[in-house]
Image 1 (cartoon, rainbow, N blue to C red):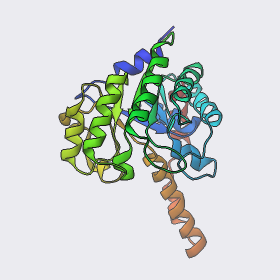
Image 2: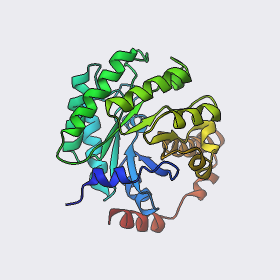
Image 3: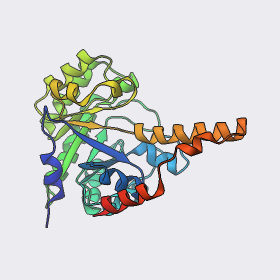
Image 4: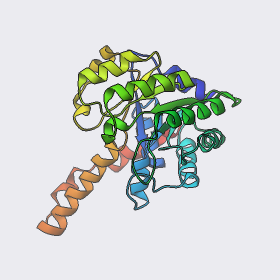
Length: 273
């Protein structure tokens, strides 16, 4: 039987970044698999949106695991769970989340250093202990499992790039397999982050950073590019603009721009194989 965690780990090659495609249901999983995705991930924000909730600590662990299990079953690709803060403050909760994630077939998960609902960053020592516990649980599994540790303080404006690097280096020492500091303030900071650690680094294609090409990120040494909720927001934008045109202008020209059903059907079939 294939070790999906090992397959996922092998994709992480600094200087040859693959695109980790964040999806939000079986259909998007199969469509992106059919279009050539090498690996998939859930998106905590997109999952919350389809449940009619806001982003940030609004989805329970049981809900996230059930959602992830559906994504895992949709294709043959490795899937990472975007599991926010591991669904609890204490290290043992993070460890238990790793074990439960492996049980539903995930190839890895991502754990960030943000407390909910406050949005504050855990202090340094606790943030490292949480990753150490998660890494220990991952190494105790019967199959490979890729643990990604996130330092979200730059994105949340809770701390600066120097602190993010300090945390990422500590997370690497604690056993994290991949490192991630979303949305550095500049390309210089992004390069510093990548070069400051000896583990694969994930870069988020979102906002202005989505204008950076994969070739450019490869030259910087990135190993992985994730989408977060960016693709879901593109879909939401299309729905928003079409609805505004219909309800406020009484026209439906945007509805002529949809993709053909037979094209989608073919991609779904291809992505499920």
